[in-house]
Length: 556
Image (cartoon, rainbow, N blue to C red; front, side, top):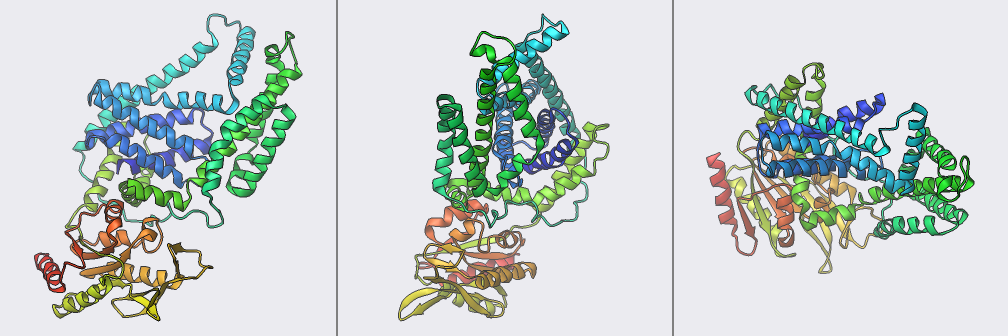
């Protein structure tokens, strides 16, 4: 919840600052983030909540269509880790929050300095000192050095962060005293989700590894090779990346970046000649250093953008889910559901800058109200049916639906009966339990299908029927909903993964999920499920399952 609120601030305020060309936008966003997180920690407290909220917010930044996601994600995560650390030592008190706020808002400054050094190399520091000394002589400033200016900028960020933390503490206390407002009318959250990657983008794990190796090799080439040769290498690399990743082209369509490159090159020619010669004024050697700096910056921009795109590879995402990131994915589902309401809550605070304390308090009260409504009522009861392939799970479910129908308990959802040919498994169909409609779901040996899992190629008509059947069953509040099955396809965000959250929010109903034994932990983590029981099809009887479900129905 708190991560979603932080992300809403980043989206709403970040868009405003970007469009208005406000200077020091990163510092302003950081201060707002500190204020919000500190206020939220006054309303809710859970050990580790702050850093987890930061991770959620950082991951939600990846919804941006921009190829620039790594820098903002790292910055947000570091701010959250700093705030989390200072609430552990010296503690959740005024000293801890003020110190944490001060340190967190220095992150944009430190990140900016490091980013410039990574992009342009150590010569960026020489160029900055030379420009500062030239300006200082022109203005007659002798007692204030180049480093002093950076430290003064850092000190201003520290003051702003401490003030933001103090306001957050006061706003959080006010939020606790406010009643929960009426919840906002739900709006479509599909515009704010991780969604599917660009269908025209082709991913490659080999290219991901290559992109990771490009930066150090490129730095060495720019440093050691003749300028003409290193420029040719970087140009060829950039041209290849622009062809492979069309989204990166947007970075070079803005005149600002070209103006920056030209200024760096000209200033280097005027001011950095002394690094290679004893002359003053214009130097071609200095201009060459400027060209090298521009080449290095281009290399960094393109390489990091390409890595950011390759990290959206569904194979990488699925690997992460299978390595224990299921709980993060489940938290993201909730965060994206909350995001439209949080953005609306922020948008309704027209007097934010005049009444920051009251505005932050009202936003947090809205978040608390949304959360209270989401958790109201009894949750869906989940049974997991598991067993080896071919152990009879679908047959068991077919018998179970008949047994439940005899007790006047309606069953909806889908079954996946196997399709055999000459005794060999050809694939599976999908069947709508409510109306008996059945179509092919997947087959072995179809090389042209885009959607695949293991040896199976999945058909669009089967996916559509299954998803529609599950959504219809959830909307009709069917007492028992069967999902046969949840597997790697759903864990990677495909199949009927979008229908699963709707089923799991049907308060008071029963869901029976078919899951392979090896995937149970991933599925329960992915959707934050605590099952009533896990049934092994080889050990549970239809009578026992019917009795267990019937008893829950009578309790409800």
